[in-house]
Image 1: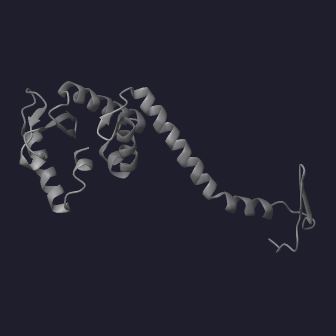
Image 2 (image 1 turned 180 degrees about the vertical axis):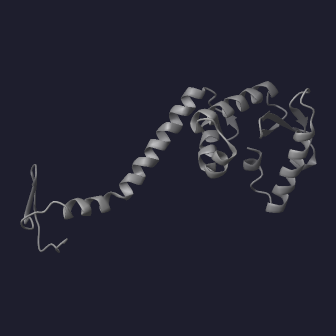
Image 3 (image 1 turned 45 degrees about the vertical axis):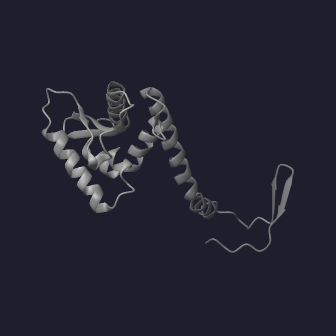
Length: 179
């Protein structure tokens, strides 16, 4: 999410922000709170970093001072649980190779900076619906190939000249041979 927020910065600036942020959160003592006051690098003192560390992951949100720290920690928890459910025991490679799916999960939770959904089951339901739609669209892309293959394998004794489907009648002119 921090990376998503800084996309309007130059690549060099993005890398600098990520390096400094990682340094700050990775060196922060595990026994203290997961909030860091913002500095000039992340937009000034009105912003803060809220993060959670899970295994080898650091999930960092940069928010303004009006946000509830505990609410954002809860959001991160729901995000991590949703990732784990969607990827079945999420690992680094899942996040690297399926960044679009990760962005879809964030988009189901947060739109325009507003947290809209924190019910993990609802988020997973929406992500599953998106996945089914993507698979059906991918299936439609291959439909012409399947249709030609099916026609080739029909072994018709002659090429049909009239096709009747319900009230619709189609006269077929000279069709090329498929064999």
